[in-house]
Length: 330
Image 1 (cartoon, helix red, strand yellow):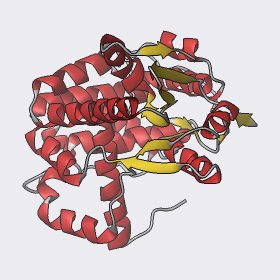
Image 2 (cartoon, rainbow, N blue to C red):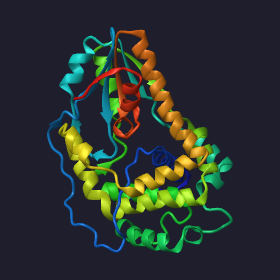
Image 3 (cartoon, rainbow, N blue to C red):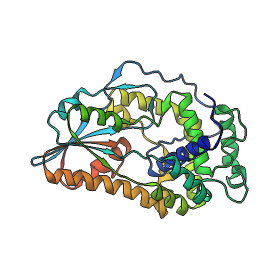
Image 4 (cartoon, rainbow, N blue to C red):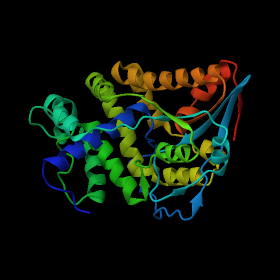
């Protein structure tokens, strides 16, 4: 499909860029390892047909309180049909469902951002991406861009982390993966069907993302651009494998598909900074506080939480165990 011309299309693309960049900073978009001088692996386009259950659910309990956690994942196969019979059974006795509030930016908000925050989103001073990105990274970026776009100047006006995120999205699209699939939306539909109260948890807003971009030093941005580039160069087969494992509920397979060193280096760089680190900490703290609130209140709660945030070392599941909660794995 051809891109639309005009201000509306440019606004939509800028909004999408900020969402993707936020995902990169929060560590929810996966990246990959591998050497740039190795030939790209041969892979088939991902095809997922039929109805899939996704992973089982973690059961966190303490006394009379019961919390069921459904792990979401990004990217996932485009066009996947998802249904969890276990979730529907649990919803029959659930008091509330907790899902992340969608990160949405209206057209008026985008117009305001293009005027007031342009320097955070675009390359400054009339320069282009090739002028601000290290030469080796830009050469790799240009090589991959040629594979996924016929426009040799595409994304040259965006700052590195956002341009790299757009490239990553294009690569995902080519192999049948999407970061736009919202498991929370599917759970909302089921909750309404079972007449269960829905509570949306606001994780971070536009200003949180802009503050993180504003405080991000070039070295940190380059580390995360490196992670995004290696995703496109080497890691697509692992992400396809991971998406298939999620679709079939193979949690053991997911846990064996470890994220490589570039992701750790990007996150370590973020943790040393101020703005992005604050955003990551905000996401984790918000989820932990919310989960503990419902566990203290008793009853039955279902929550949709990012899988990486659950499984990472020192993540939400580890923190809950450390606090004395009992957790039954899927």
